[in-house]
Image 1 (cartoon, helix red, strand yellow):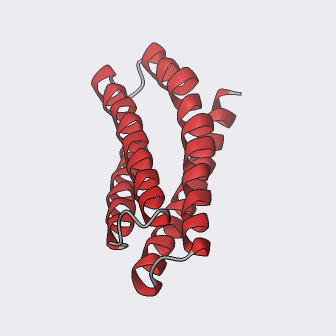
Image 2 (image 1 turned 30 degrees about the vertical axis):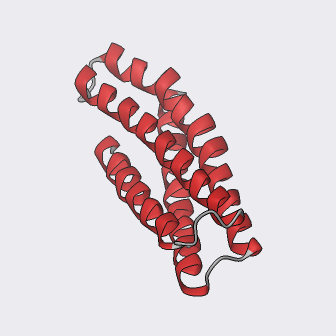
Length: 136
């Protein structure tokens, strides 16, 4: 069963990486085509994916089951490494919150700079891709 959990987490990483590609595509679309209701909705859907699946399911499994088991078994992870990964989960939540604020501001025309979303999506992608690589 433990091997299956690890395989499931690796498979979920692939889904997250695919989601990051889609998130960046939304950012590029906003930059090229400007603000549209469709682009904002696409961005919101991607942020929902990362909130519900990425954080609510995947990160929750890592924090609740995988990291404690790795530490208990004294596998090649150490407490500092798992603490850093958990810290990155929190950092990711901050990126999601910031991207939501940008989308809300674009929707209400408070902000017109469409590159803010793309920049945050790029930073989030770099952070989460590095995070996944560190966990392998």
